[in-house]
Length: 179
Image 1 (cartoon, helix red, strand yellow):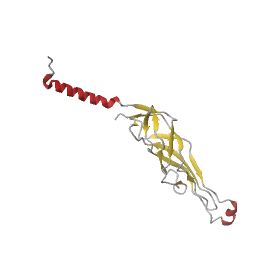
Image 2 (cartoon, helix red, strand yellow):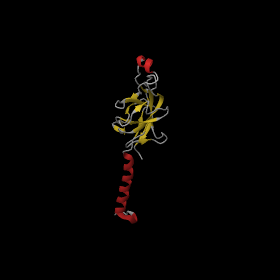
Image 3 (cartoon, one colour):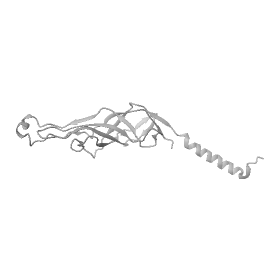
Image 4 (cartoon, helix red, strand yellow):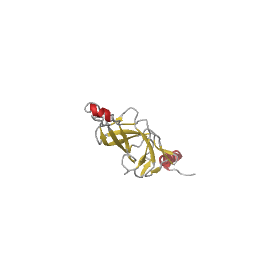
């Protein structure tokens, strides 16, 4: 007959069970790399207006949301609806004389949402890049300008918040679901 020390057979089984539980926490852990230039679809929230009249200063931040989840190796790395930031890089409000407004925006970053987080040392956000998003308002033309130069104002530029924009991940970044 075996001697299982002072805790007996039940103590041995309990210790083995606790060991299995501790190991189970790391069994499903994954580290997945999001690669540079990986396409990502974003949009602007429907409840805001992105226009040269609303965001009248360069450097202003505009919220964005992830339209479709980021999936890699069959796993959802970032859930749809994750929040991010775009920034106004150029803006000209509509002006007198029928001068149209203009706005140019660049995407900046996306915050992870879901089971995966950024690996240590990667920062808090997923950096994004892509073509600048631009809009220009409508001018009033030459005829009104000749007669009502100081009265008529051009149209504000407005970026379509219903449109889905494809951008890219700016640099390769590691994510993990191990906490």
